[in-house]
Length: 172
Image 1 (cartoon, helix red, strand yellow):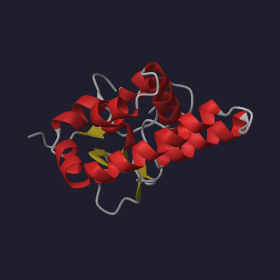
Image 2 (tube, one colour):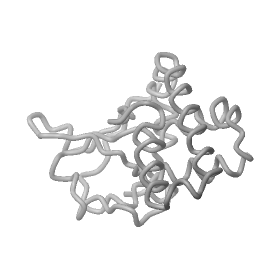
Image 3 (cartoon, one colour):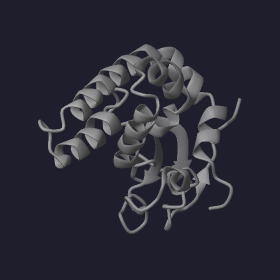
């Protein structure tokens, strides 16, 4: 797929602002709590093994980073998912392991500045917790490659290799 940029599509659609207005405070509260826990884990490496940290980042910072285990619709669907009667499922396009790792890296870069992460970084990166509605046949490890692409590559859907294409949302 050429010239796809999920962040730009999400930012330009009605979804970002509407989600933020409706659920922004909830997103911030969840995110803040998970950042505090992430810092505690980083400060106490003798208490937590590497596998625990990996799973914490994937589950609590990725899936539950903003309090939405199933993510939220980014307003994007595959072409196949738009066909009436097609079984569909939401796909966390960014991959929650990658999101957890990215949040951890960015948090460390700020010197563990919770306020900056919650009040600046989160809104600009809210798209990371978005999902794309795909046909169930598309949602398979041979069609959407896992854990082999950077967030930048995923933002361009380079990991979607057997995919019907993206139906872009209506833009304001």
